[in-house]
Length: 255
Image (cartoon, rainbow, N blue to C red):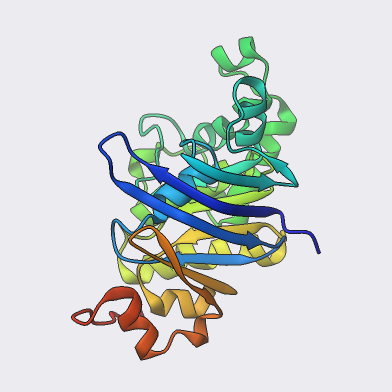
């Protein structure tokens, strides 16, 4: 099986001199639920942002479907981003707009410029948006304003919006960091559903190992920008936990 994504010796240095990634290499197969762990500042978000090319790597290659996208620009870059869905920690919804409209905005890349300006969407796109809301269990909220939703519901809208792109890979950058424990499981269960039932490749940054062990098919760990672990969740022993998070760290469980 050919990997859908290969990160090869990727480094990224910010303008202030911070080395966020240091020669990171990994391959991701289609259909994996890959979780990236590590302390804040370890490079997790930078890694995701280089994969969807919100950031350009300072060095190395990123092969997506076999093509190197590390330094593409213009139409090639827009096409690449359209194939990768992104879910952020803080939802990035337009609060005053309806849930349905927020989901439909995920289709803007496949909508004509004039239709985008006028917020005109086809009946097929509207039906698809309602279907995606049904996948994440909130089709009944379609006409509500986004700011009337709970945090967990907003994140589920963000998942439905990302599905409108028909992405090959779904990236989730700390998707439950702003949520309470019970809601965290709800959001993770829908990401798992997208992965298992739709066969979508998911790459997710997480802090809590209890969530990693429950939902990940594979886990990698970053420390000071370098890859220090690549394996199955059950392989993260107490010794590995200490190596990744430090001597003073204590595992917090999300039940």
